[in-house]
Image 1 (tube, rainbow, N blue to C red):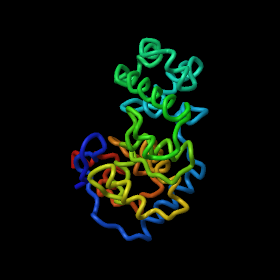
Image 2 (cartoon, helix red, strand yellow):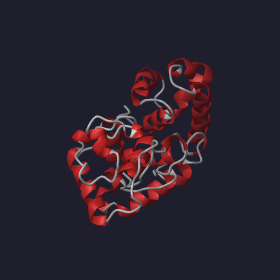
Image 3 (cartoon, one colour):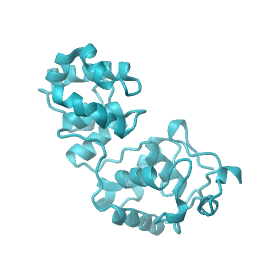
Length: 239
């Protein structure tokens, strides 16, 4: 069975074999890359700082809801000093529609204080300094490094975790294990884009509840045992 923990785990009934030959994995990556040759984040931002804030807000929230909130927020505060001038009370009305907005507002203020104090108001371009910011974990740091600075990091969100396990491309019990597995099997020229391809494939095709197996471009290679039932319009959870 798919082995996961937390929100990134696969759904009941989704079985994958423990191994897939490397040639097949490379073919899957090539097909996904060809489908979306220029992948990019669906969060709206103009600077590394705006991306950092958007990613911090996106935890347990949709990109759409974050983009709605940041459209107004970034007009009011598009740098750490301006964000600090808002204060928590000034920030919260902009992000009230986003989950956990109280905690996120405090984390953003704390992070902005460090950016101003220690980094001259600039977002650092290395993992160690990024995760030193309040509210910034490994996934957020990897997203910023990948999207803003073009680094070949492999952040693993719920979509990436699900697709990597369900397809058999890079099974792992935790996001860290999946990231490590993806780095190991992905050719260097595809590393920068691999998390985008899996994320978008998971968002629009390999969905959590009703994957679109009948139209999936990697269906013939995928190790998901429920794909035939899904393609026939039956739920693998009821089989």
